[in-house]
Structure formats: structure tokens, C-alpha cells
Length: 577
Image (cartoon, rainbow, N blue to C red; front, top):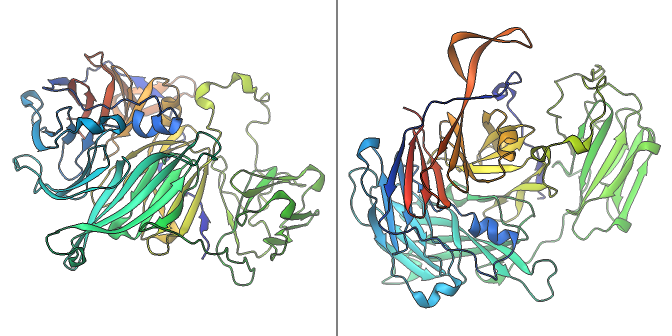
């Protein structure tokens, strides 16, 4: 079955249209500094790692890892090959990070080495990569305060070219213990490849303790699935129980190999109007026009498109196929002012000019089940026939030269895809358009990592819900104006938020840290002078300057503290009491 083209549905109860701004607070942030015995194992980019994908994947790597199972516990690796842990219970009595595992460094492999990566798969298991291509599966035992046992190696194998671990999880099926991992590589392509000459591979790996691995081996690789794309994914995570994979990226990914064998792509399914009930096109509207995005079969060219438009009907088809769109429009349009064009992602974009400006259409075609409407966030809910007043009509037209840099959006349109674990086919696709990816964060150990997107000026946090096909991604939190604020920070390197959404944090490459708190009630009476209304709550911004000239390498937040890692220091900022 073809993928369902869906959209992200905002929860308007989580939006604050009356939000004004963040007020700078001069309240100091208690900051504690731990000097490290050895430098962090930073791996700088080589001369042959010159692309933007290399920078995104390895140059901007977050060397600090937080433990979602135990409060205020972080991990990192130093240049001596030691995996170190710091667990904070009392800020004024911080101890030195303690060693939980050590990897012998092989200097002969240092030329192709990437940064080491650690991923906590469960409360008692972890996956580790030393950056040379070796994958380690470790039994950690119970971690956290009071647990000082060293980690036990359960599996170690060379997986080929060096990689970093972007996500992992563990699950049980009867007596079989399985670990699902997503490994990221940037590899050089064939000599005839156009562009940078590199491609991005994302490997979905399954390791378990099945008896099929033979005697003497507790764990072994049971399945390897390889995806390829043209850009480093902003977000990639395996679903619980290994039932699927979600990828958010600027360029789409597709599966190419399973267990080392090329994957034979099935022929595209015919788009029959009478049998197909999945969405095959989406549309959105304003008071004046309509934009329709039609998803086309692979290898479709502009010459294959047969497009017919009249004042009251629309037909789109590919030569030799059943029409994709064919029917009477809900209302009249102006064909002379309407256009269509093909986009790079093999979709057809149709622009329709309404004849009667104002009324909103409840449907594009009369009684068509293959469409999906995307509500324009800037419009209130209205019924068909209602006239929408344009609040901007009396204002002068927008001058593009007056836009600030933080008002611009990336040229590439990102997509969010969900792949089924059995068929390896995409089941859900979301075209994110200009909704810029901001950061990913672990909110709960029982859920998939959340991701944060920019929607207009706000930053919206989305929680994947793989068990809810009709609402696969749920809007669970909003940081007012953070989308605009973060874009204005030219030196921003990291961004994150607390698991309880009490604050968001931005970290620059050097020294400065910005805290943006959610609005809280005020004790004194304040009034907005322009609008003459009472202000009941205020959102605060705080700024901290770290006592270090080293580059920030790691940045993680808990509900109470913010951890910032440099090459020689680990800073702990007390944000909430």
C-alpha cells in the first residue's frame, strides 16, 4: 500500500496568541565547574570531510549524553578511552566523574576515526561505538546514584566503515532479548555521482541473544537493513519493539539493502479512484487562492503530465495511468491566473486562483476521498460561505528587503517519514515545508524521542505516537517565540529543553548560554501600556557566561539543571530549584 500523506495537527490550546516577549532577568544562575582530569575525546573533521553533511553529523556532534532513566546523570568519553559518568544529587558537593568502562585506543586506526558515541538502550543496557567501526553492547547493571559496578561487555564486532549511533532501544520477546540500533555514516559515492560525491547511509541493526548465533556467542547480529539518502537526517529513531523507523530529513531516504542483499523495489501501485482510499494529494487554502500538492509515481517527467483546468473542473493524470485528480471543483476558479509546476521531489504543485474571494472551501473536489486538507495556521476555523476579513489589507505591501535573517526559511523542504519494520515501505509521509527542525529531546524513557519544529515564530514539540496511525505525531508543548529567537542567534550551536518543558536552552559555540522560561504568574500588578490590559504572567530570559574559552562540545538539560561540556570542564547550571 502506498504511503499516506498526512499533516501535523497543532493543538491550538497549547498556543498563546497574546504572548508578547521574553523579559530579561538579572537573577544569577548558580553555576558549578568541574575540571576534568583528561580532555574530552574530541575528533575534529579531516580535510576529506568537507561537506555540510560531515559538519552536521560529526562537527556539531553532542559529546554529552543524558540518562533518561536516572535524574541528573550524564556520560561522556575522554581522550584516554574512558566512559565517564557524573550523577548530581547536591550541587555544592560535586565529585569527579567516575569511570564505568574503558576502551583500548588503537592509534593505527586514528586516521579514519570518528567521534565516539554512546546510546543508552534501557535501564540496564548500553550501546557504544569507539569511532573506528566497532560496535559494543554493554550490560550496565543498575545505573544512577549508589550504583558503582563497571559495565560488562556482551558483544563486540566490526561493522565496517566508522559510524555514530543516533538511537537505540531494547525489547523482549519471550526469552529473546533484542537491541535495535540506528547507525549513521557519510560515505563516498561512485565516481559518476553528481554533487559532493558523498551519500548518507542509515543502517537499522538488530542484535539479539538467539540460539541461532551458535555456541559460545551470547549475542549476534540477526538483521541488517540499509537506507540511503542525500542529507544527514535531523532525526532518526526506532519505534518500540522494533516495529518501525521514523526519519526526518531534508532529502528522502529509501531502503536499499537487507542483510547485504540489494532490495528489489516493488512496482508502484496503480492509483485507482474506486479502490484507493489513502491520501494521494493534499491541499491548503487562503481567502484568495488554493495550493494543491499531488504526489506522482517514480520517474515521472513533465512531459508525462496531462493537466486540464476549466472554471469548474480539474483533471491531473500521468500518461497511461488512471487520472489522479478528476472531478468538479467545489467553486469556480480563474484558469488564466492559475498555474502548475513540478518540484524536485517529484510532486506536482497546482496553484488555483479563486473567482469569489473570501469564502473557504470545505473540500477541493465534490465528494473526493483521496484528498487531505491542511488548515492554514494563520486562519481561524470558519465555515464555508463565511467571509474572512484580511487584517493586513490596510497595511502597505511587504518589502522583502526589510525581512531579518531570522525570518528566512531553508530552501529545501524537509519531510518526516515512517517506515514499516516488516515491509520496509513508508506508511506515513509529512511534507514539513518551511517548518525548520530545531532539536530532538528525550522526554520519557517509555516513549520515542520528541522533536521540536519551528511553526511561524513559535517552537512546537511533537511526540511520536506509533500506535496511533490517525495521529502519528502529537503536539504536546509550545515554546512561545522560540523559533524566532533561536534563528537570531548566529553563534548558536546547541538547543534543547527540559523534559517537563519548564524552560528551553540555547548554547553558543563559546561561553554564553541562554535560558527561556515558560510564562509564570507575577506577584505585582503589571499593565500593557499599548493595549491597556493587565498582564498576569511574564516569560523570563536569563543569560549565563561560562568561565572557559574552550569550545562547547556537549549540551543537555534536565528538569532542574543544565549540563555544558567543554574539552576541559563540565559546567552544571542550576536552573530550577
